[in-house]
Image (cartoon, rainbow, N blue to C red):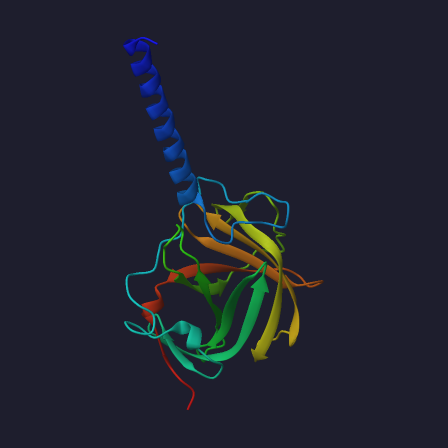
Amino acid sequence: MTPEVAAILGLSAVTLVLLLGALLATTRQNRKPRTSGAPGESPLQPAEVAQPSRPSAGHVGIDYPDPRTIKVGDTIDCQGVRTRVLGALYLSWQGIQWTEYLLDDGSRRYRWLSIETHAGLNPGDEPHLEVLLWTPVPTQGMIPAKTTLSVEGVEFFPVDRGIAAFRSEGVTSMPERGLLDFADYRAADGRLLSFDRLQGQPWSSSYAQPLPPGSITFEKKG
């Protein structure tokens, strides 16, 4: 083998290694929690949908109260509005667990606050909290599909759907235990839309607003 041929082969090998490294890095960056559908199905979230922003820097329980310690009967200050936790749903789906709290601000305007712990996006990353404030939205009998939905002129792409098991506590208008169908969607600007229903019941829907965990303060029930 001549020196010229050896040099060309060496450069080709280096180029191949760099390309494979870039491909692996891209794959790991695009991997997200809660993107898998039912067993055997491929993830539903399209690449063009915006990813949710990370919470602001800080340490749970040190720099701000840990929202995972909220209990039924506590008082929460959320976005400058004092609300009381009427009830809670403890849900699980494919090994993922999260909690949703029913909030009452005294004006019969009920909203749900969901708290979920996500694993790091990349190996070695610390887990982080996702805190979402859900507001009911009318969808006029719309049924969630596995395709893009248009709501109030905004296109939403399917993210997750499945059947979650739940246990209720306090006032929730839900049975003590049961199964909940859900379908989650995300718009290109990061907005969230979710449908859910007790099996055999009509669908209800809500918009979600992400909140930094440190933006919530609460008083424990006396």
